[in-house]
Image 1 (cartoon, rainbow, N blue to C red):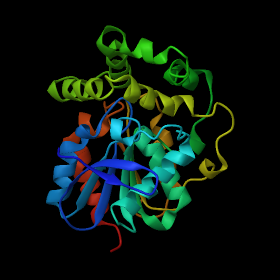
Image 2: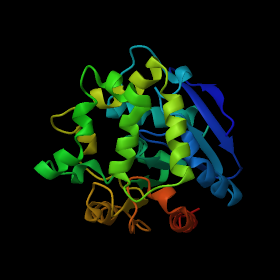
Image 3: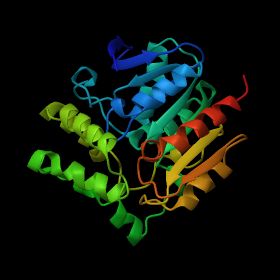
Image 4: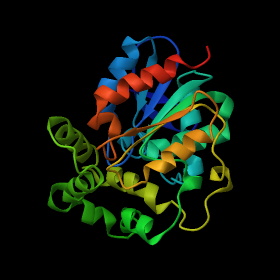
Amino acid sequence: MQFRTISGSDQRFVVSQSGSGPDVVLLHGFPDTPHSYSALADSLAASGWRVSVPWLRGYHAETIVPGRPYDPITLGRDVLALLDAIEVQQAVIVGHDWGALETYVAAALEPERVRALVTFAIPHPSLLQRTPASLWAARHFFALKLPWAARSARRGDFAYFDRLYGRWAPNWSGALRERCLDHVKAALSSPETLEGAIDYYRALPLGPRPALLENVPKVPGLIVGGTADVVPGKLYTKTAELMPAPSRALIVQGAGHWPHLENADLVTPEILSFLAQLPA
């Protein structure tokens, strides 16, 4: 993928763009990079979309703004600022993991700018319950808040990332998985970018959710999850049920936290089908 730097009003974006047509933006998560979207971006471009794939703020040195917070509302505003920077009034937003949270926030902030959304591995936050089981499944949220989190993550050639991939996607193996890990280890090899990625967790409040995230946004959505991930599949279904037509959930049997990569032969056609149903 080829990237270029675009300056926004108070944020720089490092973005790969391809294709022409209506706009779709692909937002990666943790621990990941834009490179994991390479095949999906090619499929969307071949189907008549203009595809923008940015680095999330903090994951690339040129995106770091000293002193700027990483709280969920600020991150959601990054998505809208990106649309301004690429001179787009409205786009479909696709997000995985942290990218999914940013997608939900952007749709809540300015729903008229989000034509539709596709999220991977994260149901709407208002549906997540804090139970002993869910807190244990999300224990990385607490580990990455610790002062020594960066040092721990870097130890043993980022063995922590290998463990997260194994825990979150226990059935995923092969060359694509290893390439994704190699890309994220390279991207976060500098202290600045590793701290940037971890700052998402440090800025996430442990108390009540922001009021903006109390309700599912009223925009169409394809909500994708896997049966081998740490989140119950019923939460993806419930998210889609609270969204307008043609919203639906896609539960991928045997997939974990990266369903769009673990079973791309199923998920990519489903995305293209969903997008084809959207009003012009």
